[in-house]
Image 1 (cartoon, one colour):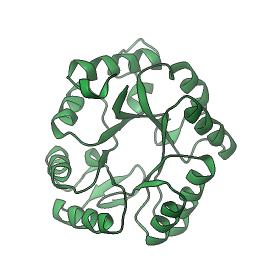
Image 2: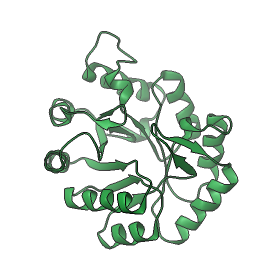
Image 3: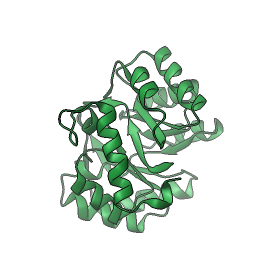
Length: 231
């Protein structure tokens, strides 16, 4: 079972309307981690989808791209209400961290200065690592790094150094949609990485379906030698 990639049922930073149907059509594939964002679908449908993921034995992730404390807490409460295993994103707030910890949810807030929509990442790797170390001391599970949204330097250099020196698991999220970037991800070796839009825009099998593209990605990851993650 692949547990290096989180398949996000999202496109253009929103959960796709037919996410439930897509999951049902692809849940048989050897992908352990699945997720979606807190926008684009009604909360009741989000609960249904999260339940289906749990019933299929999958691990679920809710990514929240919000910046105010109020919005981040709203996303955290939604994650708990739906029954997710992990909360990705949000700017870090003690209130959110304390809430999800009490609820038994694992938390990976954004590293660095994240802003705007679509999101951009700013700051130095030293600042991000200091931030990550402070999170770790507070018992936070890991961090969500928008490495390929970095605007203050080379995204790959930033991501590689951050992943190498981080004390806790790193989710490398956003804009990983080519064989070249998957090869770079393998070299950087984050805990896991996300992929969503690339499957909907058919980056790998131009005339194929979402499933065709996902099957291709599974095969390519095996080709890269991520055998320890494949049962």
